Length: 248
Image (cartoon, rainbow, N blue to C red; front, side, top):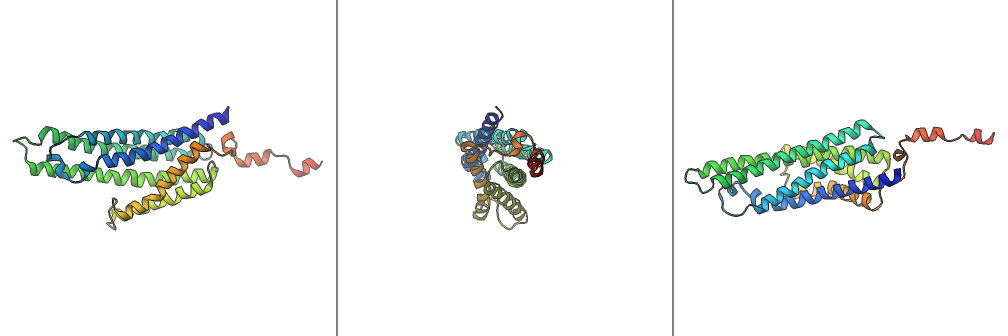
């Protein structure tokens, strides 16, 4: 029964990881008309693309928290403090993303309420739109940047020590998380833009980590390791009869 439960947990966690990638990528693409410039706030047209992007980012938020909540009962058996820290990192990431969503919805609201109004100053609206887009840009920096990097490092370290998945996958998470954190510092000090070719290349390892982890959890589940039984490895060693005892 325990192994059946752990198998279901692995599949649910894997699906959540895949949904985070789908939500982030599709949501970003759907936001393109709005993110192209602050002039969107004074333009005319349909906001359906933005609203669909919001829906996908809500899926991202739910799935990000879902990965942590689903895995917590398993990985806490190895290190409860690190497991709780991972939950906190993903919740923080989700909250920051929600702030970014609200900033974009504020642009849409101002556009619908004030764009084209004789009493509205287009220059002021564009300035406000630019401010809201700047908030969204910084939420992207702190959420899918720093918080994601820290969360990846925490989970990858837990996966490495527990061996719930192959260590090659865990190492990919350690590398990806480290690169994302380092890249965030580089972006902060103006080395390059987060949305750039370099930023995209640096983000590939953490993307590969989450996709490979999701694929393994869905296809294979957790490896049969001591942490699934709730018994630490050293306790298992102690519980084995010694050679001397057997010989007697």
